[in-house]
Image (cartoon, rainbow, N blue to C red; front, side):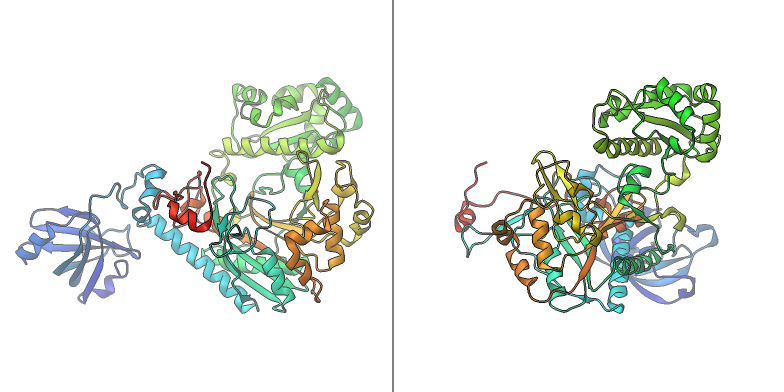
Length: 606
């Protein structure tokens, strides 16, 4: 292959096949760089040695497909290319076959300046020839292979589940597939194999996994695609700890494949802790947590401080610190203090920011010194205080989470703004110290839907709850429409694995008893008839000796994206969709013929 020849191969005959990456005509000598997925080799055509072969080489252009027979020769020391593995040798051409010509591509794989993303996606087959894309797809293959091997060695069976199944509307919208043989009925593409993998546990397979395609009709962003790949697994008789150990094991194998060693076990943090310390449920541990000022000051100091700035006393006052941000000018501090980008989160109506730390130190010297010591603030750190305004009328019970979430937004926004000055917040992919994993545990079992005025499952309705919260569930089965219901205090046996602020995967211990499953449906306001209509086959399966079980699903695309140091899933998926869920290369989706619609019994209205 084009990247395999080395100095030790000097003098041997070789055949290379690939694309013309570059042609340089120096008169009597023509140099070709020929490329395949393994790399590039320089080929030399000498006019004095073979005029006919030289003349044939003159017709070659970029992206022509060629086969060249020749002899490997050591390069002159002055012409060695240290930037490529084959840079010490070249192939002296003896035969040339032009296997195919090429139109002038809209862009060249070897160009350093890329066209816009739409052009890259329209001509994806050209874009995928680029070295970085070849490496990303190779990385994806290696990561998937290492995970598959790890799980197979540890007793998991790889079992496929159906792509065409029934619609069970929950979470994102389903992609629907009309049935020709059952007019008026539709299959749904799976958002995940959730019920099927639970059925496999009921079927006695103990340990299941698959690296599976899933489909969700939802609004897209850089780390979300309508069709994506997840590492799906389920185990019988597990404790949460056992699921975590399996995940940590195959992630260790995957990251080692990419050249990184990671530390296990991963730290753990409850959902409530994550919100209070980081302002969201997927904390980025590369940045220090927020700190409640009340942890450092005396009651008298805090009363004076909160009174002067008209800050609510029943909510935290958060200290936000961005390490090594460098010297921040007074103008920059005032810009931060006027909220700037934070208007997106409507923070101006809720949060009072104090960015003038010099003034704060002058007005509250003792408290300032305590905060600097407690938060370990260094001279080149950016830090500020954020409190809730007294004018905010939100109830205390709801506003703690609300307030911490907005502070968390500020924290991440500031970190991204000063990322150039803050080494620890740069892209991952440099060394193991950049990878900060975390298990977030004890998620709420239910979440309030203000629009529908009801409690919904925070994870999915088959998630089990902590045994000590069972009495609270049984006592509040009829409070589904009450936003103050204790249902909001019930904790699920649900967990997420997080890396550098990105959720890699989500899982839970499942409900395996039908009586408990019925109570969960009742708490969600779901009648017995509705439950049977949506999940009938699964509820029936629960009646036939279901073992305790649990599992998790991780996004393969997100893992590879982080390992590749990419900004978007589109950089690690061979044929992705745009933000409008369009495949520009094949021009999909498209209308279909009236004959096809008639055969399916479908009419379109727009």
